[in-house]
Length: 307
Image 1 (cartoon, one colour):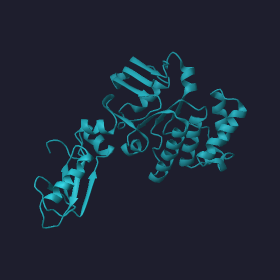
Image 2: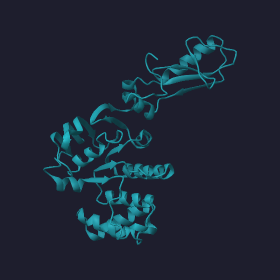
Image 3: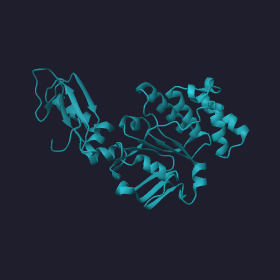
Image 4: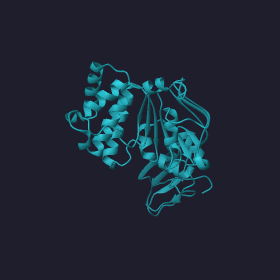
C-alpha cells in the first residue's frame, strides 16, 4: 500500500509563484523517505498539502488513501507533523502541552498521561515535565515537539526540517531518537530537509526537489547512477610504482572508477599477478551529499562519466 501518493500535484500562489509543479511520487507504507531540496524548493508546501493545511491548485494527493481536503479529521488522526518551529504553548508545562495535544487527537486522559510519560522518558526530557516550555532550550523544545507529533501513535510522520537551528551534536542526537522511535513503532516517514547528511542517517529512499519539480527519485544506488556518481577503487602502492589507466591522487593513492565494489577482489588479484605490491586497498562510495550536488549541477568529489 502507498502511504503517501501524489499525482501531478501543483501549487501556485499569488503572483504566479509556482511552489510545486506536476509533483508525482509515492511512499510505500513503512518506508522512511528523504526529500531533499534547498530553501524555496517546495518542501514545506508539500507538507502543508499533505496535512490539509493548504489546498492544491491542481493534481491529487492522498495519505493512507485519504484526500487531505476531503478527510482532514482522518488525516489529523493518522499523521504527526514536526516542523523546524516547535509549535508549542510556551506558558504551559511540557506535560500540559502533551496532554492537550493528545486530547485534541482523541486520546483519553489516562492514555495521554501514560503516552506522555513514555515519550518524555524516551526523548530524555521527563525531568522537565512540570517546567514551563518557555524555559526549555531549543533542543529540549524540539524534543517535546517530537513527542507532541507522536502522542497519538501516527501511522505517518511528516518531518519538515526537524533539526534546523540545532548544533550538529544535538541534531545528530535528535535524528537518532527519531530513528529509534520510527523503528519501534513501524511508521511511514517523510523527512524534508536541505541537508543530505540528515536524510542519509534516517532514510532508505530519496527524492530531490528543485524549484517545485522532482528531478530524481529512488534508493541511493538509483540516484547514484542517475547522477553519474560511481564508487572508486583506491590503492596505495610503492612510491616508485605506476599504474596504467589509474589516476594518482593528491593523497598519494591511485584511484579508478568502478561500477560496483564486488569488482575489488578481481582488481587486487590482477594487481598482484602483475607484480604490484599493495599496501592498502579500499572502495570509496559516493555519499548522498556528492549525489545531491551532482544532480543539482554542482561540483562533486565523485567520479562522473566522461571526466
